[in-house]
Length: 377
Image: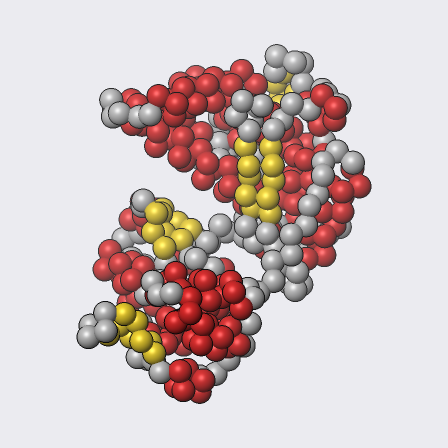
């Protein structure tokens, strides 16, 4: 997720979803067996999108949701966009509403000034309208949807405005709140101690005051003694009665933060304070040594020190990967090749080492930083 790109918080979430649809669609086209339910869902989903959005709207959305190009190749063969024309033409859909057909310019969001909007009102309204229609197309009582937005404190202003519009502006769809048939649950996480939260709180308050949707707050504090012990017991595959002395110390050092617990336990293992005993066939530890370890107060510093212990080529590769945001597909990295300008080649060996060190997580061909603090480090 590139937080500096306007609308990236929302658009990347939708694109991740549709990338999965692209994968399933490709399997169907190649004759690879796919569950009948998945096949029906994909076919109904694509049909619903084409029924709710005109071809010009799908083309316009592809600027923010690139996977649309793979999902609707016939539309892109029929509709021609002049990429040099940023004015954007308008067309009418089946309901007589206007939607953008031309090319939209999406500027970078590099300001914290809430009073400034990067989009002219007409373009902003068109974008909101298209996402409204799209959300309506992909959700219904038979196939409800949950949209999860992680680290909302990093969201750009345009994404927060769009989120507010998606939840509150049902009038864009020609219906009132009582007739809103969208079955969508938005789940967003943010850290309440971040300086950018003024924008997030403004967004949430606007949603609450609209009386269109119910807002529920869940305050996620650190784990208690029982939760920390259960987590460590599960990780070490030992009874909770044996891990309790260890978990009590770990909780004090990490304040029960789950991510801090994982980092702290990894540090103990690297420093041989926690190791597997072949003789006893279980994990063992020296509780006195663990007591001497410092409390994790500056996780960014701890992570930075961990990264500095890696080979230079791996550090360079991770720096390059972090430029793409929270996650990046392997195919994107392969585009970069060694050049005279000194471009970095991200080798498989570097990525494998980063995954082994738990700095990156791999799902399919997508690499993800498990926490935004690792990306920043």
